[in-house]
Length: 243
Image (cartoon, rainbow, N blue to C red):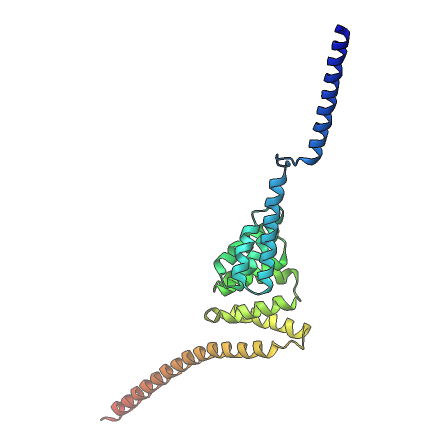
């Protein structure tokens, strides 16, 4: 009898265990995990910053550069797209004539890529727009030393030389004519040749007028001197004729 009870107890226990295991496996298949997957938060964050960059691109295409700049600034927080967003942000600043921020941003990018001629040209252009013709000229001369026949650099160099009217002295005039001759020789069909030629004549006339004024003043002084000398000769002649 005891054996029967013991067997019965074991049978009941075995059945309970089997039922428990079955229920456990069944619950594993149907119950969702409440614990977050490792790295899931970082993925979501990266996707958000990627979306910021895409929104910046959309506004950039619409030429709403101020709005695009806002999203590029947010997109820069993602390491993988930092420099791409940085470059587009620099362009937004330039397109909105925010020259100070544009210059700072382009310099930052140029520091990372110091041999990039396109970035150097952008910095030179920004300097010219700020009225810093000296630094602009220096950069264009550096660019032309490496690429002496680059049409874009020649045109911009001539434009900056001509824009600095107050300092269009003899050495700058010489630089202008040399660059102009190169442009005319290499690109005889260039549509801006006439404009540069007219501007040169205009600036040289200013110099010539100043020289003419100086020359006229010198001639007037010389004539006055001659007049005084003639009067002196007449007085001497009169004195000599007095008995």
